[in-house]
Structures are given as structure tokens and as C-alpha cells.
Length: 320
Image (cartoon, rainbow, N blue to C red; front, side, top):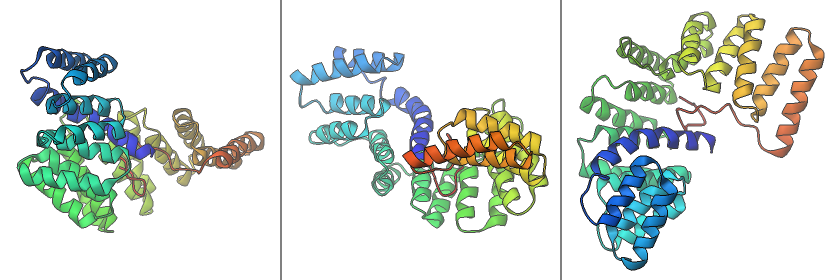
């Protein structure tokens, strides 16, 4: 669930720009124009209220239903959002942009099969939409359809060359097929492409650092993990994996520091407390180790233990 939600937040940021530019600018009824203005200003609750009031008198307005569906999506109410898109579809076929929202409602609900279905329709209707191919690739990846994901990210890159996100996710898909050398090349290429960028993504650094550490090369992976933690200091996965590399390299004080940061960012993840407890054990600090193990046990007694969440990708088996 946590990866799914994180994927949604990333999607909201990217898709909102597209939707605001292409949909919120539509001319039409003054009441709907007001709702769009409220959406652009971020006042979701008032936009929802206005749209519901409008629909009491214009129940057949597909545009209003779609706009309310988008509003509910932004409020992370996917089931309610889908109802509005379904209601609007009775009177007007949703646009490809509308279907992107529908697909992501299904992502929020954990239904990647239906997300795949609607994104496949989007790319069939708008085959030059690089963003849609990218999103379809992510859905395929989450379904463990790695070969198809590779095809989708390849299409996205052909339409939007040197796109760091697509190349990074291409690496993840190669890893899913155990094509480790190809994955490493993809991560390195994604890193190279953003060398001169003002804002860099830490994801390819993180993924390459993890890959090298898992290949028994923690010293080679360390600089990439350090860069990932620097670029994304609020990402607990980066600190966790950096701490893991430090631990393997027997740099225990540094490992402790990174695990503590990860715990601060994700205090309810039992695995992090367990790993921090292990560090304390190796440092001979038995009392602190016992305290961390106790927290781990308490968390495990109330819910299933999960890996550290990564806010940039939803895949639980192999996070970005």
C-alpha cells in the first residue's frame, strides 16, 4: 500500500501539470470555470462542494462529473472518483487525459490490471504520448510483466529521448528479468543524462548503489548511495541502503547514523528498528539493541512488517 500511495503522489505532481494546462483551461459554464479556478488554487474541498452543488441541477453534465472525478482523485478518494467518471461516461466519452486519471484511481485501489487496461486504451488513442507510455510501463512493471514494461519504456524514450525517469525504470525492468548488466548500463546512462541538470533525481543513484551492493561490491556502490541520500534526504530507503553498505564495510558508526535517519523518517517500519538493533549489538550497546528489538516486536505484533517505503516508486518487490 505504501508504495502505491507514493507512486500516486509522484503521479499527482506530474499529471496535475498536464491536466491543469489541457483541461482546467477549458471555457464553459461560469460555475465550472469557478471550480477550475479553485482546483488551480488548491482549494479541493471548496471545488468539490461547488461541483456537487452544480450537479444537483445539471446531473447530465459529463464535464462536471469528470471535473468532480478529477477533484476526488486529487483528494485521494479513488472509489468515489471512479463513480463520477462512470456517471459522466454515460453522456460523453472520456478523453485520454480523463482515462489517465481513471487508470490511476485503479492504481490507488491496488488494481494494476485495470490500470493497465485503461492506459493501454490511452496509448492506442494517443500513440505519441510519451507520458502515457511511461505510465503504462510502470503498470506493467507492477504486474511483473517486465518484458512488456521494457517495450513501454523503450517507446517512451523514443518519443522523449534522454528521459531520466524512463531510463531508470528501464533499468528496474531489466533487473526484473535478471539482466543485471543491462540494468547497470541503464542506471549509468540515467545518471549521465542528468549530470548538468539543475535538479537531479536520486533514484538511478540509489538503484545502482543497491545493485552493486547486492553484487558484492559495496565499496563501489557506496558513492552512489551517498549521492542518493544527499539528493533525496527525506527518502528513508536511501538512508537504509546507505546504512546497509556501511554495515557490510564494517563502518558501524556511519551505519548507525544512517539507520537512525531512516528510523526517524519511517518510525513504524519494524525492519528498520531490527537493523538498527543489529548495529547496536555489533557496537556492544546491548541496552539500546534490546530497546530497538522490543520496538520491532511491538510493531510486528500489531501489523505485518514491511520494507522501508520509497516515495518515488510503488513496486514492493524491487523498489526504485
